Image (cartoon, rainbow, N blue to C red; front, side):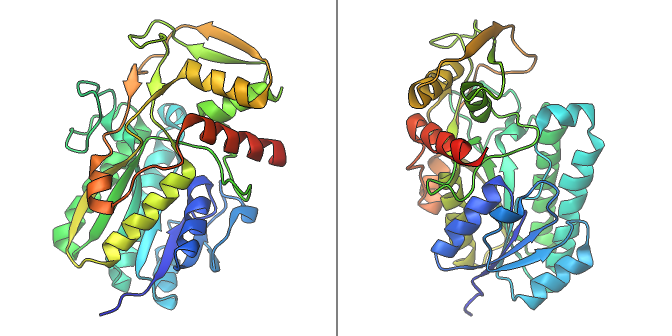
Length: 330
């Protein structure tokens, strides 16, 4: 049986979703964007079709899956601000967990078993015993956002035997950068990610950028993270969709999307200063509670199972694309 190449992208007008829609269309898929525009942007909606709706609207989701003969779902719609999740946890569980239950109910009703789920490296918490974080490590989230994603992965696992679910949970590391053609990029409100915050400092939008902790056991004393270009993330989703459409075996497979290398906070700041040609104020502050020194992905499973690896994620390329998008957009 030939499966439909129509892909439903939940949250397809958001940051990673919009880049993935562009990548899916470029790969020959027909895309249906489903978004309520609570955080997505209408000018970043590049799907062949648009359905405006809420993740909690199970009936609308079911109708959309049936009407567009969907072969696979890619699910991005989530609240993502980890710090805010500590202050107001309930909306994170309502949207991220209950919303996904609504989607799974609709998929089961419509007979669509294939799902690529947007998970996160936050499920690992502060597990830093291994030099690289690999998928076999136990989940140990330290905030409600991470807990909500880990809970969804547990739900997906229970749906494998019960409903024949075929799912891949893509655990992202630090999504960054922008479309090299300037069509879409990062514009969260409020912004909490390091690279766009440093760019705001370089552009004079904010007075300074803070380094939280300079005494970590790293080469320059600042935290190291695995930054991955959003276009590499998008290609990882395309590879996951292709993998699911090529098989017919129920299961849940968690897969890291990262580079296997890390960049420090100081390196990011230096890259923005170098590429922008701007000088800006950098303030050294004390450590924030719960920030591990190093978080870097073991990306070998993505290479083995999906034939995927990051190809655009050198720091200068990430910063250059993010800078060009910011200069064009803001």
